[in-house]
Length: 392
Image (cartoon, rainbow, N blue to C red; front, side, top):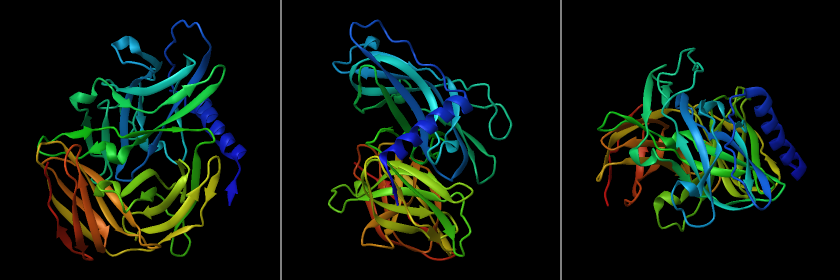
């Protein structure tokens, strides 16, 4: 079943209004400089491509700047459009939930990039444990429960995370953009340094009719809804020369207590994959989305699984971190799908529970050659050691 363009636009408006009136904590935008031409409005919101690995992922966003077309020369080439100064639990921003970062008036014209500044001082709100934030940026683990790790921002990102995404401000019109913060890929588990890192992975989405929504439910055998299932919209490209790019995650979320999910995507052709620890994974292949429409899927059923564990040491030759993707054959086509991915810093170890089966393990690090380990077998109740080494 598909809903029309008006339904999608109305949904976006409802989300934005709900955030303005209900959540508070949005923060005002920076004032624009005097202009000689027309102006329009930019509205920025935050959402998360979520993960079930943590109880909470807290990130403090100090401000967001935008850059108009032309040469980037000094600080005067950037204009502040949002100053939320707020500590967000990214895992609360799932299934289409949006948190407003700011609204600002801007000169009409083409803007070429954004810059997000991560804060170093938390806000005064309590966390999910009812306690003051111990850090500006941190995770609360699910296992062991309530264990907290500060997230350190690499020095190169402390001046701002640049998001290269063109957008146009039209005179007397409102432009709405969503910063989709991927918590799963942004949190890097500790390596030799002993530090957990925050390396933000963010996509910029629009809420206009160039976007689509995939919606559905996930249930267990027998029909009971499953909460906390990771659901992702994936693209498969067998011709990609870099193995890391053969499976790309467009967007993801986790199901709510009723097993429901909703994912913002660009119009395209996707494999929708559902997985939760303790269950087999399932895939719905060839889901086609159309601009301005909602694609409603039939319920996805997951069966209980016999799990094993894959573990190993991660070595990145020049330091840095590795993104590790655990891939398997789709249940509905010859495509490959990603069941799970994690990020681990150099010298760290990983331990990943997976349904028994055969996997391809693909590990990548920026600027280095991707490695792929084929035919890695995880036996039910067993532990498979697969060390990972990434070289130039």
